[in-house]
Image 1 (cartoon, rainbow, N blue to C red):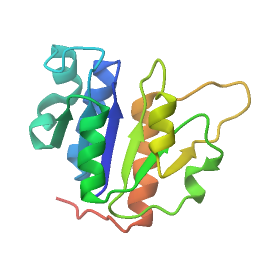
Image 2 (cartoon, one colour):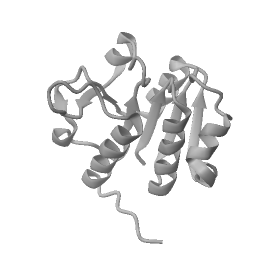
Image 3 (cartoon, rainbow, N blue to C red):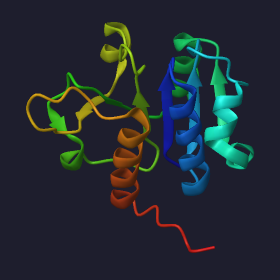
Length: 155
């Protein structure tokens, strides 16, 4: 199963939206703390609605805790980064990948960047900085699901 990992997310609304997306698509989510908000915050619950109860969510107290589990499970880490060169549409995703997304305000530190097995980018027109985090997650997760034939049946 594909997983989405959020590195120290800053914005509760984005995280809630991503949790809702993951619940609807059957994706697991890892939140690497500390987050920039209280994870029980009402904004998170409002954005995720009642879908949050349906998502497979794992919270990690820090990066090292997350990495230990990821490496033990043998999951490939695919980092979405504005510093990457390879467009996400040209990357070959695998069913067991963990798709890592950095903080809205700062991305990920160099040590996390270096730990990634692959780095991908969403190409944008020149002069634009970045997309909304939840939008980026939806685009990349959708492509990863398409490539790995993770089709869902209408329910």
